[in-house]
Amino acid sequence: MWVLLGVAVVVVGFAARLNPLLIVAGAAIVTGIAAGMDLLATLAVLGKAFKDNRYISVVWLILPLIGLLEREGLQERAKALIGKLREATAGRLLLIYLVIRQLAAAVGLTSLGGHAQMVRPLIAPMAEAAAEAQAPGLNPAQRERVKAMAAATDNVGLFFGEDIFIAIASILLIKGFLEENGIVVEPLQLSMWAIPTAILALLIHGTRLLLLDRRLGRAAGQ
Image (cartoon, rainbow, N blue to C red; front, side, top):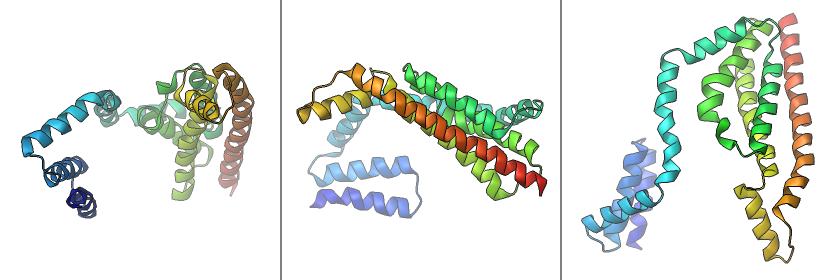
């Protein structure tokens, strides 16, 4: 039971608001030592696990670049660009992004968008700028709603678009689960049945985005 000390380290570390990386590394070391391994062996196992799964962490290398772009005024530039387009509205902008995101995911380009690399630095600020043009003096609740809709748009576009692409992990997972239960289907069949769902998701969420425009329009008229 001593190996559970690693869990205690995680709980105490997060409760104390310490650096998450230090917490995880400390918990791994404590767990290894509690299991009877020496320090060098524990570090070797930790390093091997990181090396074997390093491809998972590659995507995080782009985050410093995004942070640097934001520091240099990326969000302000995006807002200024949208401010010059008189016909741009938050709903229309997000609807266009929804279509692009869903079509890109349908052909396997799932990394084309995303919250960290697209929504936060570009899409959300642009939608916020468009909303400010529609309804000057947005209150905090309205501003947060626009940001939430920007994040939801990315989720809906990716989730309901990626299943159309046959070489995606979700399709293979569904195929494997069905075969375990005696139902044999081809990936192409699953992809074809994902198309009606994707169309409905586009129509439903697209309607929500247009209703967002109407809500902002009413707020402007008050």
